[in-house]
Image 1 (cartoon, helix red, strand yellow):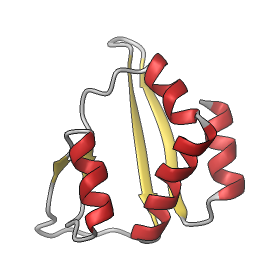
Image 2 (cartoon, one colour):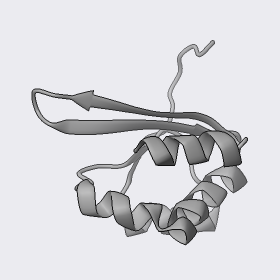
Image 3 (cartoon, rainbow, N blue to C red):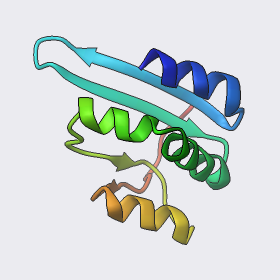
Length: 97
């Protein structure tokens, strides 16, 4: 996990947020990721795949749910989302600062 976070910090300027949180009681881990644009997200997935980090993570973690908090129109991202059975939520309002 630390290696992946360091890799993202050093090599992916389009990753605006890449954080991992643990709930020790349930032994679950939650990732919060936010990207500058669709290309930055696709580059992240490609980097994880090419470096083998995605395979390593899949051996350690069981992905229960992936949620996209944005409308997805890019076919590349739609394909990635479908591969992981992602849920897509569309914003109705709010404030982010």
